[in-house]
Length: 195
Image (cartoon, rainbow, N blue to C red; front, side):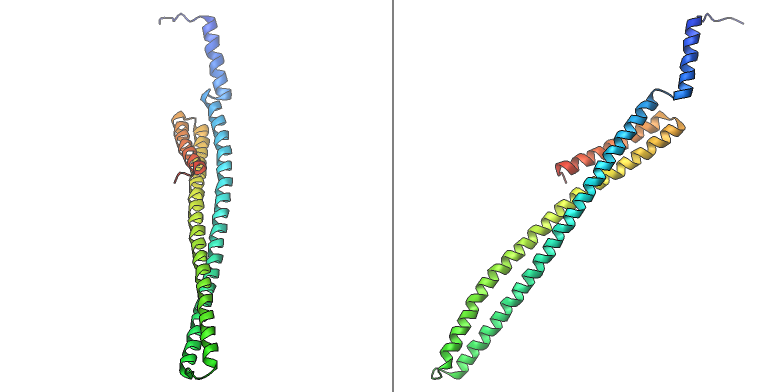
């Protein structure tokens, strides 16, 4: 049996390295721990942002509903003024020119019609506010979705990292890093407002 020439110092170094790897694991395990902690922090930030944008979207939608109710009330008021003006005009017509009340009814009908124009302008402005609030809510909700996706991919990455640490498979950790990168991309999209 041939003997290999192994120096004592080299043998001791190999033994020390093997013992260290057994005690502490491979050197990539330290990076796995650090990357998992960073991803956990990013997931927490993304979760907070997701919740904040969700709340803001709900408030914007609620403002839109309130404006819509006001617009509906204004249009109802507009119609009531129109009905009242029509009734007064019809009464003036029915009374004829000789009746002194005819002039009063015609003046009142004109007053209602002029009030109708003011109400129409207000109702139209309220409808524009509804449209703006709904568009703002949609934008905020889309940003919420970007952060929610970031949280999801970060959690997947953390779970894969935990499994990689348990089974000591580097390729699984690299897969986890890939999922984490996707989460970071969604988080950046959320901060930048990219839809």
